[in-house]
Image (cartoon, rainbow, N blue to C red; front, side, top):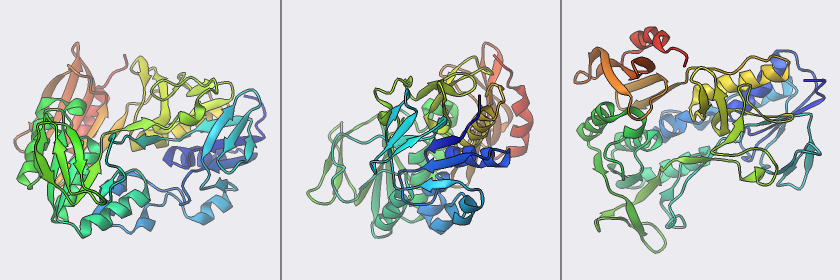
Length: 386
């Protein structure tokens, strides 16, 4: 795509760091700038709800690379400086510091921002979990508390609930859906996840929403839509995340549940996207896809870097993701559309050791393993292109 004198990567995320590193490793010698809105060196997010919250990892262990790696790779870091605007015609990015940066190619890797409740977030003890600071603040509150209410039973909520339970707290999870992770995996796996949590002492309140948070300075309780009030020293709001695209408003970059890209992750002339923020056309499944999972961030960052260096290969992965909860390691490849037929192919759900296939019109589109990693990897090859 012509001579690139300067590449700017906005988002000091796993996707952003991988893009920058791959560019250098595969021969790019021009100027390379990585912009991040947090002051911390780029770090990994999956351990936040697990090892960091549980206290089994020192926060420094989450760093993606030591400081010296950026110096050695001649990657210019602009940390603590959020992107606030983009001018496609002039090829400039505006930063919160007031600075403008010009680019020949721009990679958007800004990830997602946690959704919040419309009330109560000014109360002490009410948390979201996205950043390392969020994780440390939540852990600090959990260590001096006896009860926590987790609002939301998706990946983040159920992982954090497991971590809090292991810390010895009374844990209640509230979600308007009938089962945890039911939207992701369907009824049968969701039921097994619910049973695991209940055996471990987590209280699941499904099919009910949150109407209000009680407290004056600090949170003291959670009022549900059925009128019940749950006492709570700590509340974690884990109701999903939205692509961090507000800074692109009015720029002309297509945004619709993420930065909309073609099969090479290109969104506009000289503009690409990678990671949680990217919604791109995946030829393997024949449609637009946005994937909020760690492995995709790395693979897409590498793909975008190679496209910038002249490759024209469509990015067509089979998504991979996992969740660790208590003694369960649940791993999955592919997609899990609502209404897919689910067949247990190996092992048994009751034994909590199985591989399940998800089929649409007789074709395997997703495979899920529960404590059965080797068989799952073999079955991955059954997921055929659209």
